[in-house]
Amino acid sequence: ELHLLFSGAAFAPLRREFDKVHQQVLKGRVWAALHMHAGDGNVHTNLPVNSDDYDMLQTAHEAVDRIMALARSLDGVISGEHGIGITKMEYLSDSELQPFADYKARVDPHGHFNKGKLLRRPTQVDPQVRHADLSHAYTPSFGLMGHESLIMQQSDIGAISDAIKDCLRCGKCKPVCATHVPRANLLYSPRDKILATSLLIEAFLYEEQTRRGVSIKHWEAFEDVADHCTLCHKCATPCPVNIDFGDVSMNMRNLLRKMGRQSFRPAQAFQSWLVSTMHPSAIQFGHQLTRWGMQAQRMANGVMGTIARRQTRQPPASVGQPALKSQVIHFVNKKMPAGLPNKTARALLDIEDRDYVPIIRNPSTTHADAEAVFYFPGCGSERLFSQVGLATQAMLWHVGVQTVLPPGYLCCGYPQRGSGQQDKADKIITDNRVLFHRVANTLNYLDIKTVVVSCGTCFDQLQGYEFEKIFPGCRIVDIHEYLLEKGVTLPGQQAYLYHDPCHSPMKQQAPMKTVKALLGDQVLESKRCCGESGGLAYARPDISTQIRFRKEEEILAGEASLRDKGWVSDKANIKVLTSCPSCLIGLNRFQDDLQNGLLEADYIVVEMARQILGEQWMPTYVQLANAGGIERVLV
Image (cartoon, rainbow, N blue to C red; front, side, top):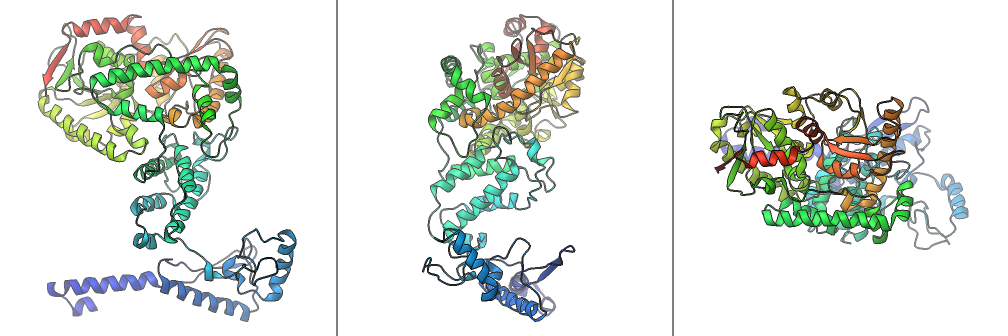
């Protein structure tokens, strides 16, 4: 009616004010909702309120008074499904409350439990005990926080709360969660982490709204919850309300960083620097430091072997971050891989210059009009395990396509997101997308339709790059699925275990279907996370120890199955393949854990290059590529 009376453009501001008042009235209405349990006849009365609306709260209290008076007038009994709480205690008579008061005086003579909440009036136990009513109750409110908080990031903490508020506590997330290992640590399933996060957010609100300042211990507990996540996102699949605690964990870490409450961990800081820097000499220096660090870790494992084995045999459950001494033992309790390549893939091919786009082709068999693919190697396949990046290039060379590489060293941005550095990740992603558009414009004559990756984490991040706008009509595909499309397979004469990474790069069909098509039918899947999880093994090695405890059980079961089937002899080594650079480190840690023989970890594409191109495939490919197989285009 008011809109009709005040129509026209001149009254538009007035109509907006009408709408604003109307929404405030609707939002402040108090409704009494009733529901009954058919079994016991209890009638529950719920009054939803906005705790930042004082008038609404007062109206709700008046409504409760009327409801309780009506219940008494009908000879009703004041009860509760799980006991009588503070809201209804003030409506009990003295005679009804006295038996409880007598019991509490016997079991809690000093008044420690729920001080000031359960007794009606001061007693001789403690004269400071207040009346058991709502006059001193506190209700958290994000609305109040918006007005009062000066130091908290309201939008960030609000987004975290909104992301988890619909949790049904059903526990369907527990079986798939890597950090939920009941025999090693029972307390960190997504359901439990959501409960803990909700309580911590309530504590933050209380401390902020009462001007107390957020407790350091609460920040530490908040970080501990955020640490207990491998970012595998597997909890989202069974969740009936679509909560992805991997995304929640990244938001929690980002908030910790913005508030200056994220712990400094040297190994994690070094890893973050190594994947973020783009200068060739710095990367080569970091690569060499990594090699030395892995060698030192293996030596420390030899020195502390007895203590380490005791720790891995039955990992201690943890609540919060363990002491430094314990963390050191966790860090060295399983040996990291040896034999890291001396140089990065780009250094071996002399294509480190950021001003040039390398185009790699076999000059004797591949022509300029042949199919061209854009290969994004990522940090792990290029800076750390150069054999993975080179094997991918060698197999693309083998199938006769032109391989376009990005100019210089690049990171997809996921490691930064995962560690809570969202601002740095956003910059990396934006810079990469701008650079890729320049590459696409420069090389538009190649008509690139395929973006190849050799890392599932890169795949997940690149899906947000909108490559279809960079290379029109293109797709992103894992190297192994691409080779299968080209008909490249192994004869299937060897048996393997296959570890599918948390971030599986194989998206076109079930990963095991692709793996068996490439390697043959004698392949068994080894489930569960390997415990490396990017930087988790360096940031919180105690969590990795608990995850590896569960993975070791899977590996031993896989070994027994391979030997029982007769696919592998009783004393022979067993090879486990994967498709993730981080998992390659994690799986190598189980080298000495088989019942018989050694566990040999490798990449599928490296195994294929070795069997198809020969044992000397890497030096042969590097020599051929450097002998006229690389075109450098200024970008």
